[in-house]
Image (cartoon, chains in turn brown, purple):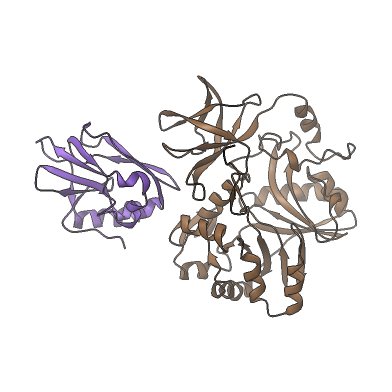
Length: 363
Length: 130
């Protein structure tokens, strides 16, 4: 038996197919993964992501510590602002990807992955001592993502307090706010608008059911994966790991090179990689003939130039899409070996889908 | 609980076989199999006219989650395939024993493979789940 989130009983009640994910009993889908996917693109869906790790970093030198620990620069944050970043090892490999929120100048909140919990907390803790900061993982919480074009309106509709509704209505993208015992941020992992909401475990079932009554459908981890893939968002453990740098997995945009004197862990290696060709991540589209899957080899002519790191069927585009890591020089025509057959694929720049629209229309 | 029609025969690789009474059989995958695989997104059908042996890979069903081979339960020649599945792979989910059939095979006159009846298939999938 795995860990159960505070919403486990709600999942069972809604007919979820429960699977193990990093030691947690999580909903894969509640009937149809594709319908759940479409629900998020067209209306609003909710995900239980309480398995993710939430921790607070506090102390007078908290910012200094985070600027050392992360490749993106927490110094860019004002109160309430969030930042997506990688945490690197000395070799520039990705230990985890995460979101860091600035609560105030001495308190920051981190949301890291479930599968990497122990090594993240170990790494963060090992470096904390020199900065005199406290690293406190939260306990007894739930984390609910509500995503889709109508997600924000539906969340507002279940809030009784007019002040809270007004606060959320004015909340900018990648900003967060505390509403009573709820911490709400306008972030997500689907390519749609919406919120991620941290709340006490005891309040979670009531909140979940209120959203359900408001027409927000539960969505499982299956659709979460196809939604993030369509949105071109990297998945830790698939698209990157400790042997891959952010430059290689499509996350160069999350590396803050300026100011040059900020010595974040892994910087030396990234600076060296910047000056030479390294592998890169591209998007692939297969119109027909099969489904792209992780680890299928990518060819240019007779040469293997890389492999798919994430691939699936795109319910929105009605064809298969993938992220692949290939040699830096690759441009133009590629083929993928799908179950013994070499199929030509189109190379695109991710994302594939954002805000309910295809991003890969042919010119 | 998945549906297992009593009049059909089954394989332990989760195909069903329906005797058409004219020397041909219809083949598809079971309700249990489609449930395990989840939403179908692609079906690769065999060529009409191709010869198939017992246990030979002859079609592929792919769901969002995974690809799975379909093995011929009998020996013979593929005489018809369900072209509807090309554009509507989800028929395998919605109606696995009806509109979601995959192929029709003309038996070559030899004995069928290791086919089991509905009751045994029911026991088999229950044991497999445990």
